Length: 182
Image 1: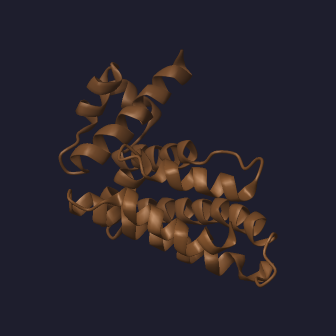
Image 2: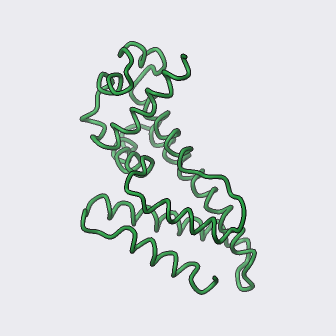
């Protein structure tokens, strides 16, 4: 029961912070969305920043599927998942960037999220690159950094410009990175 309440609070925080932003979302709003008393939010999280840290970590963990099967197909499936406009991780990440400039705890959480996400990408990239003759596994961390940056850039453009075709950009990225290898 207690774990369920905490989970609902964190999920409500992910949703509301991503939709409304930090300044427009109160702990009271999050409590209402989670269907709990505001005091219960403070029971689990001493500050709003503590809740943000939990929300970013939760959104990051929800984004990562396990790597299984054909690595190329897995990478393509990950790119398909990134096309969905309802990805709470990216919405929350973009919103929390401004907070990271003022709050080291949020900044450190975002840095951990980036490291985890790039690590996940690096696993997939290593598996795909193992099938190629002209790439070295030592290049995987740099390729993962570039892939993460590209996906972040695509997401930001889609967030700022509702006419931006996120799906077409992701398809072009997939073709550039894997099209000649498939």
